[in-house]
Amino acid sequence: MKFDTKCVRAGYEPGNGEPRQIPIVQSTTFRYTSSEEMGQLFDLEKSGYFYTRLQNPTNDTVAARITALEGGVAGMLTSSGQAANFYAVFNLCSAGDHFVSAASIYGGTYNLFYVTMKKMGIDCTFVDQDASEEEIAKAFRPNTKCLFGETVSNPGVKVLDIEKMARIAHSHNVPLIIDNTFPTPYNCRPFEWGCDIVTHSTTKYMDGHGMQVGGCIVDSGNFDFAAYGDKFPGLNTPDESYHGLIYTQKFGKLGYITKATAQLMRDLGSIQSPQNAFYLSIGLETLHLRMPRHCSNAQKCAEFLSAQDKVAWVTYPGLKTDKYYELGKKYCPNGTCGVLCFGLKGGRAAAEKFMDGLKLVRIYTHVADSQSCMLHPASHTHRQLSDKQLEEAGIDPSLIRFSVGIEDPDDIIEDIKQALESV
Ligand SMILES: *Cc1c(COP(=O)(O)O)cnc(C)c1O
Image (cartoon, rainbow, N blue to C red):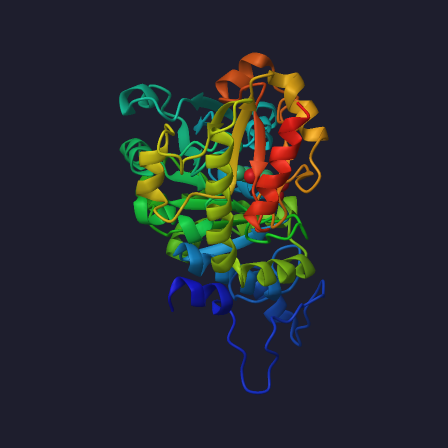
């Protein structure tokens, strides 16, 4: 199947007389007729469903579709993008471990890494993703377990040099984990460039309609965790909570996702509800139709804004003058995403006035939605960050994040035009 067909079909093949739609298995539990069989499920000796906190058939069907879109070997859904990023890293790190992350990442992920995971004894060093390989390599320590970044960062829309990051990670014998939320696999498939594990906030373009919060993790199966036994004891030494089972030995390329499901999901319980997974599947069916429109609308808005006197700057990788134009062309030849950033000459105050003047474009704490919306990170999503941290994360206090929807582009531009007049 080609990509567009996979959006509509992958992961679910109804049998004779079975429903066209993915069944929503709204059940906490599953019946077995023998006690012995149930015991084998709990020992991971047999595969099957027994309790929805660990696994549910609807979720697995939708995870299989996303896994097919990314070109991975195994995937799982989580209750949110936050849970996906936490599980992806925590599946490799324990107290006393360390990992390296690009500094230009989503504010929620930054807080998770900088504040919450630190409390768990896991240290993160943030690096400038545009620095040289030598410079970034300096952040690595003997106890470093992974390298993390975003394909196209939220909100800075910086494009990650995936091949460079993969080289750095692999030369330190650790996997590269990439949050591919903004481009989606329609615009970029990080596995094709050496990335090992991909995460998503499916809340964004994959759903696309602001219906539900969710996340997912997909493993390419390419990173050989068994080759570095000392570095990844969680995957290569007996799991006491499963009678001494060793994930890489028993499950091979599926070891990483199996551990995240059987151990982390069991113990932490951030499962996506089957109903939400179903909504996500509806969003995925049109991903290949929506993404090009998001990109072309964003391109038009970026060009329009660039030509306005009151606009100080515009960042969008689709602009030829953009710092990330070349990387964007390389990794996302069909466009990066529908998100762009700009600042007004009047700074913070002008940003607030401008946003109050909007009529069609909405103020939402959301992004990557079919409806156009804007947010001012310094006063909204990133308000916990100090000015210094904002600067490190590459966020100008005047920055307005503009998530361009799939309405008629003329209507969107008309609204921006009238709101600019009020500034
Ligand atoms: C929104 C977002 C997240 C967090 O996802 P939630 O579904 O809101 O938990 C993580 N990464 C990126 C790039 C995001 O845009």
